[in-house]
Structure formats: structure tokens, C-alpha cells
Image 1 (cartoon, protein in one colour):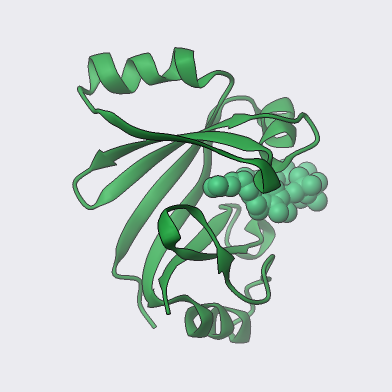
Image 2 (cartoon, rainbow, N blue to C red):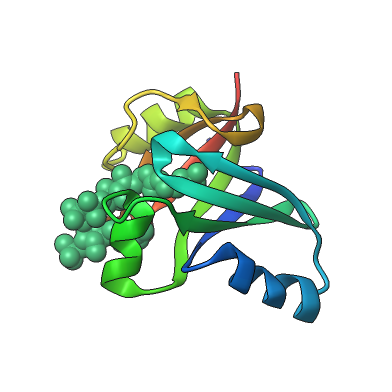
Amino acid sequence: MKPTHIEHIGIAVSSIEEARKYYEKVLGLECYAIEEVPEQKVKTAFFKVGNTKIELLESTDPEGPVGKFLDKKGPGIHHIAFAFEEVAPALTEAADHGAVLLDSKPRNGAEGLLIGFLHPKSTGGVLTEFCGGK
Ligand code: CMX
């Protein structure tokens, strides 16, 4: 099962208010949504670039996934998200090929999409998200 496109690239930032200046002033992109996701312990800001989005991720808790990432690696690319027509079979197929699932079945993510993460140790060091429908 092939992804249809890169849905978004997640970028860990220390502060959305600071980081958004680059995307808005240098790249000329428009922030179309800012949303807190308490269960992920992040605040997010979204920008569209064609069919793909940039998701800025600011931590709301040092013990959350982005808080720990920032502490260890500093700001930078946190994850890449691939879009699939159907997420559940894509996750099953990835697991059959040796990927380690952080979500054994899809859960609800932003913008009404289903999402599931793959452990970076099983994807060449890149935290990977599958997202899409069904
Ligand atoms: N990219 C690449 N490697 C990463 C990583 C990332 N984003 N986050 C952690 N790692 C590495 C760690 O550096 C560590 O490497 P070493 O063993 O070489 O030191 C390894 O993965 C395992 O780290 P860990 O300490 O066992 O695990 P963590 O507690 O840091 O958790 C992870 C890592 C990926 C399991 C966790 O962050 C996770 O479950 N992520 C999925 C959910 C998520 O990231 N949510 C935030 C975004 C939500 C959104 O987009 O809305």
C-alpha cells in the first residue's frame, strides 16, 4: 500500500510565536490553525505548502514527546507524516514488514484524520506518522 503524498512535516520548536516569523515573513506562508492537543502535550500551528503542511510543535510539558525531543536534540524536524487512503491496513502492512507500531490501531488526530505512529528505531531514525481515512 503506497502513500498518496506527504501529509505534513512536524517540526519541534521552542516557541511557536518565535518560530512562525520565519514561515510567515521569509517563506510567505499563512498560519491557518493553532490548536492545543493536550493528550500529546503539544500546541500546534499549521501552514499549507501545496498538498503538504508544515506542523510546528511546541511542547506544553517537558515530559511529553516533543518536550523530551527538544531537551535531547533541540529544535528541528520531529516527524514525517505520510497520507494513505486507509490507515489501518497501511499500519498492518508496515508491521508485517518489520516496522514497530507505536499505535497498534489508528486513533483520532487533528483535522478529523486517523493517525498512527511508527517507532523511529524501525524506520531508519525518522519518527513516522501514517494518516488518512476510513
Ligand atoms: N525522531 C527520531 N528519533 C527519536 C525521536 C524522533 N522524533 N524521538 C525519540 N527518538 C529517539 C531517541 O533519541 C532514542 O534514541 P537513542 O536510543 O539512540 O537515544 C530513541 O528514539 C528512543 O527514545 P526513548 O527514550 O525510548 O523514547 P522516548 O520516550 O523519547 O519516545 C517515541 C520516543 C518516538 C517513542 C515517542 O516520542 C512517541 O511515542 N512519539 C509518538 C507521538 C508523538 O511524537 N507525538 C507528538 C506529535 C503529535 C502531533 O503531531 O500532533
